[in-house]
Image 1 (cartoon, one colour):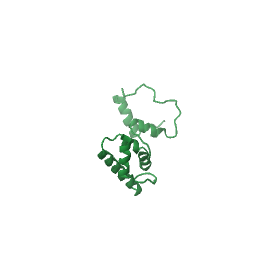
Image 2 (cartoon, rainbow, N blue to C red; image 1 turned 135 degrees about the vertical axis):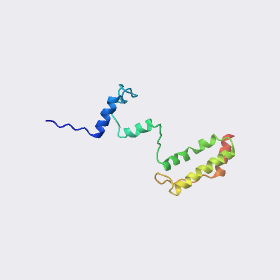
Image 3 (cartoon, one colour; image 1 turned 30 degrees about the vertical axis):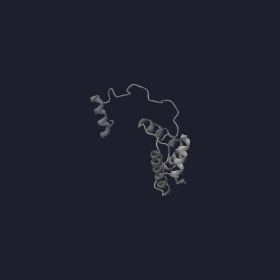
Image 4 (spheres, rainbow, N blue to C red; image 1 turned 90 degrees about the vertical axis):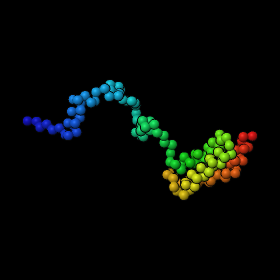
Length: 127
């Protein structure tokens, strides 16, 4: 005589199927996305970023370094000297936080930006 056992979870799933709770779900009857394609090592991370519409560019300190490298181009888009000074102050605040080890990521050596020098460069780029 065979002994049949149904766990509590199996019973809940069976009962939900009998009630039709799994009928007409989005994607029902459609192939799984990327079925048959080889998956990379970090496939789950890429899938999460895509599904949740997230972006991950890297640790905060490394992103700060990139922001500093692209800062001159960002300043060129500013319309007033006050906007330039505010942008420099905001970036310098981030740099100080990174210097004090208050940002995620590896330590980086980044100098603060001289506000007056940035304004002079902004003015000369506008002329």
